Length: 169
Image 1 (cartoon, one colour):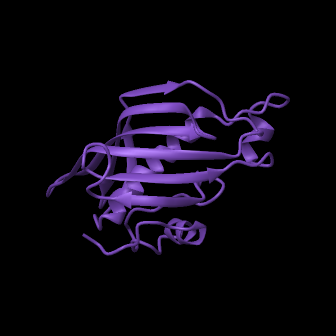
Image 2: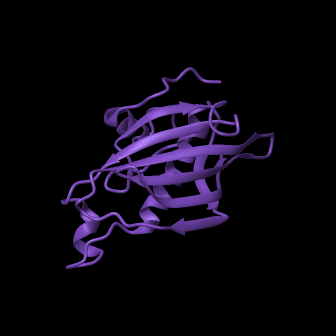
């Protein structure tokens, strides 16, 4: 297990986006504007609902975010796929945080439920991810997790069996 902190500010997330946190060729967050969080408040390899690891992060919502202008003009809503991408981003981050090698990529998700919307008057999204499996073998490095996204404390997105892998190719 690598020796990284359990919380990360925006500058640390940008360092990860530049490939400087976990090293070249390893887990990397996207750069803004696709970086879907402002800080990671807690991460573990053995916490969470199943004792397999967890990660919690926050994203500050402001009316000037790029997606509100185009989705949809006159009826601004954050695309639900961006919330899902934020969950995938954080799942891959957790694998890199564990010290596991390889570049992250999403494999899929078993179930997605969208029960609310993110409009410009919201203030903060909170991502909560609980791993159900974290696998590292000679041939496979993968995390499987369930997650929720809350907008100002209200659960608006729920996912089950989200899968992210790391690959050294």
